[in-house]
Length: 122
Image (cartoon, rainbow, N blue to C red; front, side):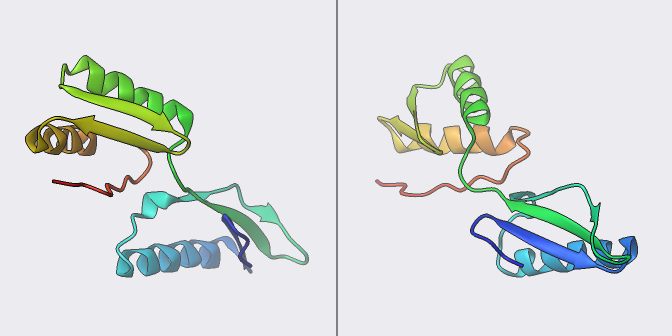
């Protein structure tokens, strides 16, 4: 069952639930979406002997992660400005090389969430 930002998966036992996890990850990989975009909840008992599990779909950057990235980039002394706008980070700089260096720096950070880089202009 699919809602706006979540999925509900139901399986007969734990093994089939794990197979559904693998199936979801494979479908995401075929669409070039990182598997970190899914947040699997705790399995709970459903009607009968089946199991139900909520799977949240992560969208945007939460405020804590945005602050962590902002602090790390400022600590690296890069000459860029970062603004947090809702669930997005806007990075601006004078030179294209600085922006590319910032993207590489953020990619190398250990975040538990997939990041996308959009609207990169010359």
